[in-house]
Length: 525
Image 1 (tube, rainbow, N blue to C red):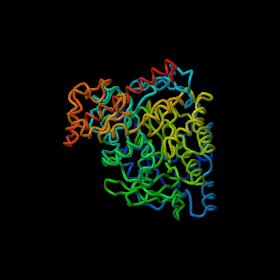
Image 2: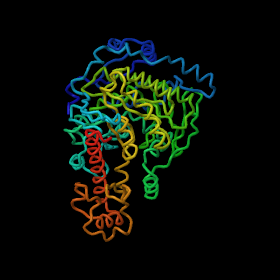
Image 3: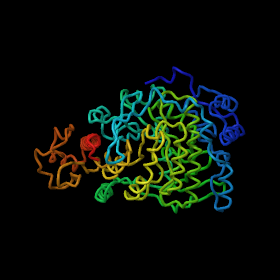
Image 4: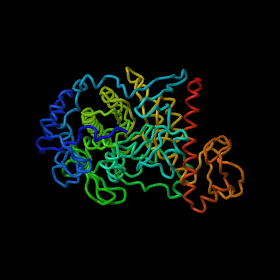
């Protein structure tokens, strides 16, 4: 992976809070992004500081400062008139024309190649070309939360067909820290996965999950049987409670209690403040700091900071959230374009289930020079909500030149939702759902009569000698071990079970995607 030390660090310190206000004023006023270097030069000073030091200094950074200035710019208030007045004071996000012409040009290091579009649906087969390899689409993206797949070595996962892997910035920021990863030569070198592509997020999902609990996780947990199994196995986090009103605070931001009853997560125009689950320190996450961290990681695809409201948020708060997300994503993009480093940035389309807000988000974000489109925000409370959303939203991605860029569905990978989304033209899907299922004894299978699942803890498998999980699977687990032995490992709580089960489910997901690609090529779906 490219060494960060080989070029000047992009890390920058804020000179004064007045200069920060000056910069955000320029952004709101539509200053041309091609002059961003001169703008940044007037408001910032270049520095050699590490990402770790950036986490502890400056209001524009991933800051541990408890300064009241962090909350000076307000988002919402208890009074609706105040909320409207404060929200409107920030103005619209920058116009697409303010970004430099070169940022709209095709990238030599990243592109989507369309191979075939089905005659029966919007489904399509393609390839995403990245600096670290090709991603065949439709494709499954395994989640390596802390830079590791739980229980499985990356090389074994790669042998099971895994191409793109998703790592979470939030956890990596807290441990080991962006500076450690940067000094290792980037995330590819640090985790020993040098010839396969990686994607990292902004960390916002995890932060807002502290506030809103497992709302989004619950929606992507598959069918009823899977949900029950995970609950019985202790594999589900406790969902938080929130009334959807945003719990406005007196500074105009939103204070929302963590799902564990801990300190609040506070969202302001500047960013989002929360406490580290590791040591309790206050941390400020901003659009600029998340990009700086992802520059240290060096992933092939990076994600801007966005706000993640729960599905039951009232429309007025949701509309404000969409506007704020657009401003945050524009700020993230400006920061990214300062030093691209052969990284692609996807936007994240928001708007919940609201047709008007979703359409507004699609229209605005796809007009900016992002390299791909992620579908995020609240996707509903169940699979039916998601299906309905994609039904009317995805045709918009076939308009104009949007068809030339990849589309990613965030946090979804249950089979039913995946197939429906593929038919609507989605290219990639990330979720820890398949690997979590495996760790808790739910093994995915194509065997007839099993309804897609084999629950290994059942006593009926104790004497299933010589019978693999799935007779059609070529993974190491199915080739070497039978159900009786796996039943024993699970009941004995042997760590080996987690490795073998997770590896199998990864193979299952990649085999499923390969079948779908062939079905699209054959115009079957």
